[in-house]
Image 1 (cartoon, rainbow, N blue to C red):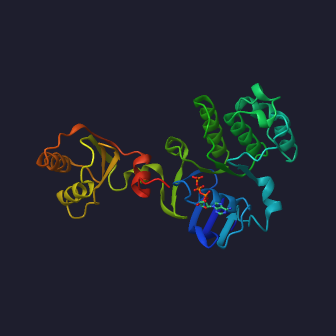
Image 2 (cartoon, rainbow, N blue to C red; image 1 turned 180 degrees about the vertical axis):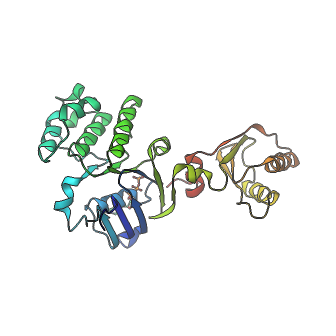
Length: 314
Ligand SMILES: Nc1ncnc2c1ncn2[C@@H]1O[C@H](COP(=O)(O)OP(=O)(O)OP(=O)(O)O)[C@@H](O)[C@H]1O
């Protein structure tokens, strides 16, 4: 392939003790794009990314980074791939700026350390030992270390977790610049706003496989891009309401979904039109249920995520 994608994963399987935590996962991440990988805790995101980094050996399937095999071609890939791990992986005794200078020295064409420090606000803790850094400071240093070598592909595992809003903004700006420079960015995140703001392509992973993917706009528009929210007494029969709302629409319409997001707070998804609203209020009236604060609004990525992956905790 003359210009292979940043990441191409096909049929990836990874088992721990006979259990497949990644189970036939396919994913392509393009260069010059930000690909966000979303999924509930334990869905297999980190394991997948670790296979991309060559840290884990797949049990089946193929992983190619820039067309190369991360296990076999590790030496060729190392200078071209930037990795920001959740636990940082930084030497605990060294001082922050020393770490960054040291990492920069390992690359042929590193970024300007002073400029990168300035961008991520590292100056205020430049002389502090890594083990004494706050969680957010450590995150920023780990990001700087991932980027200082001017990689072609970057893996960011929850890059803005633990960051204050200012730092989060600085990180997002930097990630957008990477995209503009043609870097392929793969980030795993639980922050839906991060995916909504940054991602060109969103991949939703559950039980070790991709269950949906596309642009944010396409994901929220599937099955209609509106959501109805309302308050009523807790414990309504959401399954019955969904059945009635689905029946209210034309036969080719996507089935409605009803979730009790919090006790007494309901979210209705699926195509929304005046007939659905009328049926909804009629269904409640038949049960002597007072509907309050009914609003029709745009679906969010979080709505889609919860519809796809359910509400139970993992
Ligand atoms: N070294 C290991 N040995 C055994 N099980 C493991 C190992 N590493 C991960 N797992 C299990 O594999 C599953 C997937 O974990 P993984 O870290 O890939 O999920 P994740 O999607 O990144 O989750 P989170 O959102 O919580 O970071 C989990 O059930 C986890 O307990």
